[in-house]
Image (tube, rainbow, N blue to C red; front, side, top):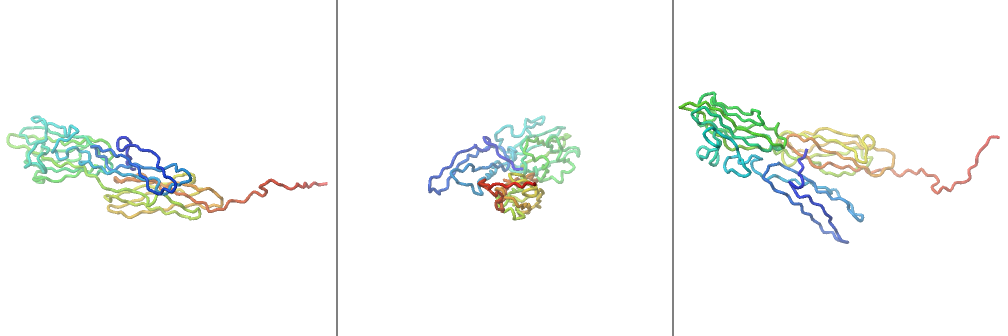
Length: 361
């Protein structure tokens, strides 16, 4: 489903009245203040709705609009992902090894980028080292990336692993030192954690160093990568159809991203129009392959009858998007009656002639 922003934390809730004088055709505007923060939250949205038109004015098709805010935070919730600055809020990375207060060292010749890097092991004695940080993993995150190098190798029992919420997602030993003689990219799948909640990530190592050698694990450029899976929206959100139109065709577009295979469910719901009387209820799933941005479509059957009725409405909603995609507004369908009022009153003024009763003699 879409991630909805909250008034007071993501934007300032706003309401008011727009007024036009007689003959005034000028556009009016309103301003909503967006609030900046330091937390990465991914794309979020809220709606602005026009309502209660007065003096015979009516609302057009675009009476409700979605505002989408793209996050401007770097590091996707990981503070100081390259170990460079120690930005607020503190702590950036917490951790320890027995002879140093922090496992983060500064040496531009050893870092993959900048000057600082995470140093695990490298001490010629048995030692355990760790660094950890908790951060939000948004719905459209797909991988946790980092760079790993082994500067020297000790015993094959020396190891480094990555834990996410206590679960092991990477395990490297000194026996693989030749593969990491220079920095190599490691990507961990985090789809199972991509729920918008806080998760704990730990880099941990144990080395069994001797007087002559010890494995030194160097880690830099930790990055939580966000999949740009796109957004789902109807090609239009307001439909007017005649009761005898038979079928209504709906098109759903995937925009603002195309990474990964994604899907979304659709379902009709009653308004003043009732399922199985005014339309045939429908539900299903639309699926896009990786890179696919073509429009998908489905139809809903309108039921024709011989009764005169007022205009009636029902909705079709998109829900349960997968793969980090988000959804927008439902579509509203107005069924326009095509039947003439029935003439069933034979004496509307009640001016009846005398009634002759027939009796049997």
